[in-house]
Image (cartoon, rainbow, N blue to C red; front, side, top):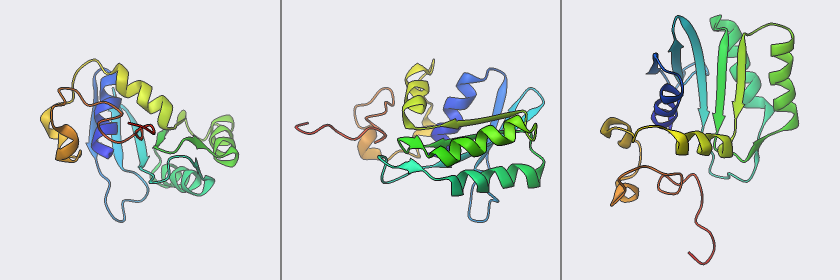
Length: 155
């Protein structure tokens, strides 16, 4: 999922570079997007239960990582349906206090819209993060093909 988010973010930020840095003990940063000379940390959460809200716990953990690493920009992407009210409030607070230059919370639907709007098909290296069974006969990755949108009943 992290590789997919990185590919989409670089497509939306011309002249940017994205580096995967997520692993156990990553300190709360999965990807580092550099736009020009401005670093932007990205945290990605792939939820099994997409109908629930992303909790404030993970958002504040990410905010702490930004502060500890002195990174002025952050984007939190989740496959959850929405962010909790407390999570949104935490994001607004660090922006209003000037602790970061940019802080975005991107839930499932806005991410799906970004994915649909990507200007080019994802190259083969990015396809490795998607199960092969989902890629069969798919020229272009879609939210349905990667499992971000569950099949509707009767399908």
